[in-house]
Amino acid sequence: MKKLFPYLMAAGALIFVATFAEFLTPFNPYAQDLGNALAPPNEINLLGTDRYGRDILSRVIIGSQTTLFAALMLLTVMASAGSLIGAICGYKGGRLDTVLMRLSDVFLAFPQMVFAIAAAGALGGGLLNAAAALALIGWPKYARISRGLVLTIREMPYLDAAKMSGSSSVSILFRHILPNIAGTMFVTAALDIGTIIMELAGLSFLGLGAMPPTAEWGAMMNNGRSMLQTAPWVILAPGTAIFITVAIFNLLGDKLRDYFSRTNY
Image (cartoon, rainbow, N blue to C red; front, side, top):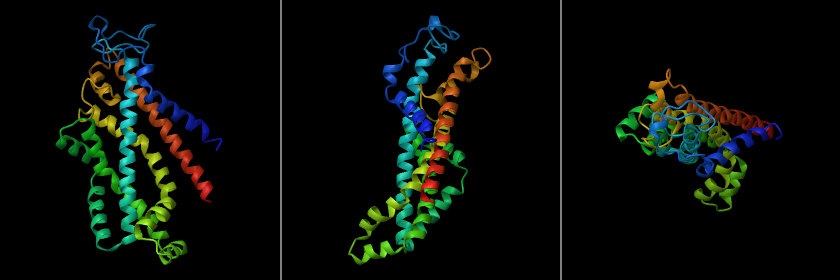
């Protein structure tokens, strides 16, 4: 647990910044000052300003709220829905299992990002539509893992005892099956946080995610890509924020996997 603590603290710090972003920004992240446009990093604007004179540090901080919360909400919905679908299919079997698993095969046959780009484009762009596109292609992974876990435990003696005691299928599912697979599904979701952040930022970078003037890291990189040589701080600041955030959550996911593996062993 001691090895896990620093990574939990780092992830907690990121969530703290995102939660209280409005109080931590030194300037209004949406206030324009064209007379101070593209100012390099200095003692007033620590990370410089963008083409509209907006303080980049303030936009990176407020952008953490948009990027991180969107990723966490998307992951929660995607993992919860996929895990529940997989658990139902694994426990009940039959035609429902066949139909839903074949449907998941269809989604898994497409490259995830390519499908997300097509779906987000068809839905018309926007952060909500980008999240919906990623959820549409992301749930089968959790459904497959959940179903596989349930198939290994559905004949366990404690489930037979629950059936004999008169417990309904819904009660068995929520009281006995889902709690037993929750650890594995949680670790899987933790390992996916970094990927989800990059995918949301990637869709925004392509113009299919957050729309201007929303401060979102991928959209900020898209707005600054034409100034990479003349004003590199405009794109490097949000890019570094993405790198640090993804690295922290990936390391946290690895440590959580190791911790739960040792615990289960």
